[in-house]
Length: 392
Ligand SMILES: [Zn+2]
Image 1 (cartoon, helix red, strand yellow):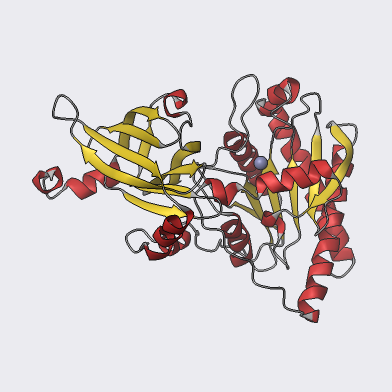
Image 2: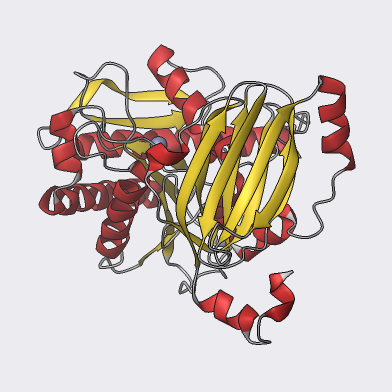
């Protein structure tokens, strides 16, 4: 193996420079499909299988994906292919398959010149039982999910006692690009991060307010990690920012969502369903939710938190009045998993829709971003004043 010929310093070089995946090809049909990815040096990789839906996850060290997306468009056994950054040290390819499959071959080979390093993945159909066996018997020990989960969580922020702490959550990130704009192909994860940074900076100009970002760059955070980060930092508010797409391209404007078991309408239900797919896109295992324990105290906390969330949503819409366009019935609710902290009032703001060309223009406009950040800050201040007046 070439790896043994590398100098001892190779691993630290790898930590500094991401691998470059500079080419990709996919060939085959729905019985057997081959993927080839060209790397600038030998990639370490590991393969795992996840059920519900069936996916193959290929974990890599930090990697820059430099080939055109169309070169690795889903076909054959694969119905969806995603790749991107997970955190500073790792990247991932998630292959969602049309049914149970396994990699009959997964290895790094030299190219025709004898120098390059190409990762070759040959997938073939297997039966359901064989796939279940693969999932059950595999080991995650080399790059465990647990390790990735803890490494992404930043240390608690230093807030002064009495500070009002606000978690600002840029939706999506890393391998999960979120929605893609109609005109400029803008990625939602970039829009949300730009708004989150603007809002955090603006909020931090206010005395007594300490805002922080759940993610500071283009990395993947699971939905539960986002909630956990807010809670560990003792956030008094959680604001998740999004700019999704709708099938109805003429719909534009902002919407504020709060959590509820029952969605307010079909649009809200569909949106929550898509948002909740984030973990699946990134190749996270679906963890069965523990059965709800009948806990009267937790129930009370939840109800109180929900009332606060609703009051923040209304404050935001008051600020937006005559300033920012909103959709009809702009306060809606649905079962967004990112809003599920029982003790942190939380809203999800769809700033606008990337499916609408005019909204897309606004979403890329720095001045408009500053305006939204200012209006949201006003809303937070009004909310806070009302809570304090009520002895909160
Ligand atoms: Zn989104």
